[in-house]
Length: 66
Image 1 (cartoon, helix red, strand yellow):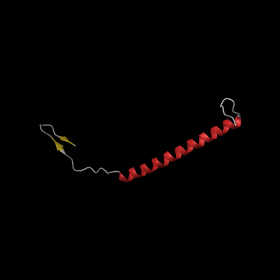
Image 2 (cartoon, helix red, strand yellow):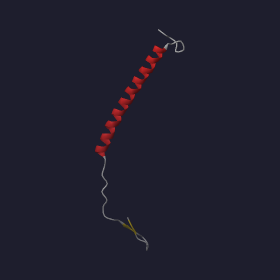
Image 3 (tube, one colour):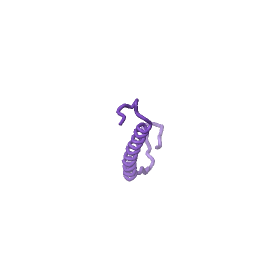
Image 4 (cartoon, one colour):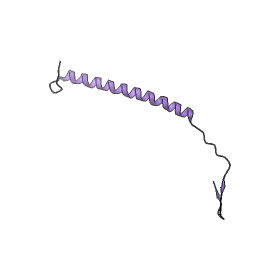
């Protein structure tokens, strides 16, 4: 077994790269699944804004309708 990264052969480097890619894929998959669950829950909880009647604000001659 190669105990040093400097004296490691091509097979050892390949194993390290494959294991790190698999670990990264697992982390991305878990993160994506949690993110998808929270996004679905957020859509279900979203409040709908329904505008009411116009409001007239004024304390002087100028009238603002909103």
